[in-house]
Image (cartoon, chains in turn orange, red):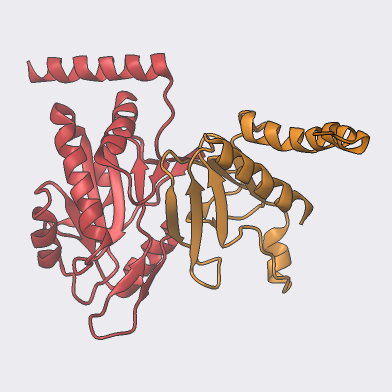
Length: 143
Length: 190
C-alpha cells in the first residue's frame, strides 16, 4: 500500500489539531481562585431608588467542586441589602463553601422567582469531564 | 468535676481549632454583625429574647410546625448535632421561630419542638412582630395558595456566637456532623 505525499503532510496537521484537545482532556483543571465573586457596587441602592433595574446576582449560579466551589458575596454599598440568601451590612462579605455536588435553592426576594439556585457540579476528574468543563468555560468566555 | 471536664473539652477544642485553623462548613460573615434582638412569645411560656442566651452559642432557624418537608429534616439534624455535642450541649441553644402565627401558638410550638429535643425553644407572636424579625434576619416566607396553608420559607440556620454575633449561615441539607464541626469551633471561643 502506497501512502501519497499529501497524506504524509496531513499527519502533523491532524496531530497539531488534536494536541489541544488531548491537553484539555489530560491536564488537571486549575483556576486562579476557587471563589465566584459577586459584589454590590457603591451607589447601587441610590440607582435602584432612582428607578434603575440593577441585577447583580443571577437567579442561577454554576459552581464546580475543587475548581470554583466557593460563593463570595460582598456588599460595597452604603446601606444594608438583601443579597442572595441573607441581609448583608455595608462593607460585609459572606463566604459560602460547597463540599457536595448538588443543586441548592435559596429563597431570595431579590429575584422575580423568589428563588436563587446554586448548581454545584462534581469535580472534573475524568478526561471527558475535564474536556467538557473546559469547553463550557471557553464557551462562556466568548459568548 | 463536671466543670473540669467541660473546661478540658473546651480547651481541647480551642487547641484543635487553632491548630487546624479549620474554616467553618457554614457560610461565614465578615465582619460578623450583632444579631438583632427580638421579644417574642416563647414556647416555654416566658418572653423569648435572643439576648437571654448571651454566653451560649445559638442556632436560629425559621419554619412552621405543619411543614412537611424542610423543617422536620432541619430540626432532626439539629437534634442529632445537639446530642453529639455531649457535655458541650449545655452551651448550645436552638431557637426556632414560626412563620405561621395562625396555627403555631406557644403550646403547639412546645409540643412540636419537644418531639425533636425538649431543650429547643420556639418563638411566636403576631404577624407584624414576626414579619419584623424576618426582615431583620433577611428571611423570606410566603404562604402558598391552597387548602393546606403551607409556606415557602428560607431554610437555612444562623450560627450566633456567645457574644451574640451572627457568625455564619448553614444552608439546608448539611449533616449533623457539619453542625458539630462548626459548633465546636464556635464553642471554643470564650
